[in-house]
Each structure stands twice: as structure tokens, then as C-alpha cells.
Length: 173
Image (cartoon, rainbow, N blue to C red; front, side):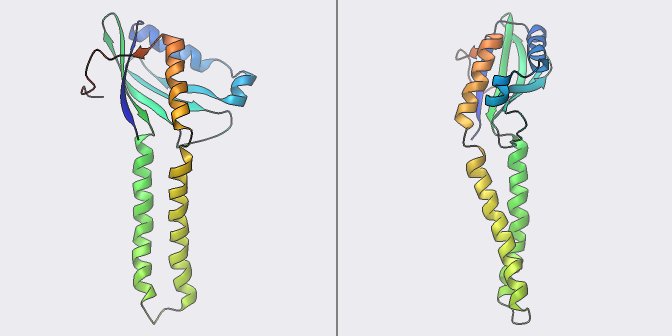
């Protein structure tokens, strides 16, 4: 589950964006290839960071996605920390599409006109794909708390961003 977070950095938005851009452009060290690092992009107004491992793609990885706003001589980062929203949309379509096939297959199971050799795959394959989707949701984000900590530690080390508790989280992101 994603959560809203507010971070304050003493750097202004443009220098902060340049620091992050410089960090993202540097080469991977061998240690980072083995353990992973925070990567991303953005501008002086937007930020997107996620923890990645070398040559491994994980669309279920935790990401920080938000806005950067000048405030008190520095930058306030108003962001959402968790799974990407696009992943949630994809999974809704995934289960909806397969749910449609499951609904049609329940109608076919009751029909005497259709042979059993057609009924079983028409019901079984979407069922297996739904179980695979559940497994992806359960195990795809198993390292989420660790990745959240690494993203926040990266921001703390790189741009001295600390959690801001002086204002309310009800502001729009």
C-alpha cells in the first residue's frame, strides 16, 4: 500500500534536480551491480525514484513519485511512496479480463453441447493465470519496506532530504 510522504531538502529545486541528474548519470560500481541502487529521473518540478538491481526488471518495485516545490529557501518534496499506480491499473485489467473468461467458462461448464476437452482448458488456463497474478502481487513486492528505506536513505545522503512533520499531509500531490 502506498503512502504519502513529505520531505524537505535545503537545496533549491534546480540545484536539487542537477544533483539527482548527476547521480543518475554516473556509472554503476561493482558493489551496486551486486546489491542495487536508487535510480530515476525528473525535473526541478517532478521526481521519480525507484530501487533497481543491475539487469533485473521488477515492475512491482517500490517507487517514489511526486512534486518538488520551493519552500523556506529549500525544496519540499511531496510524494507518494509505494507501488506505481500504473501497476494497480494493469492488475485491475488483468483480473477483469480473466474474470470475464471465468464467467463465460462457468456457463460452458453447465452446457451439455460442449465437450469436456474444451471446457477444462477454457476454465483452467484463466484460473492458472489468475493464480499467477495473485502470486505476482504477493511476492513481487516482498522487499518493499527495505526498498523504501533505501530510497529515503539515498535522498537523505544525496540531497539531505528529511521527513517534514511541520505541515499536514492533506496537501495535494
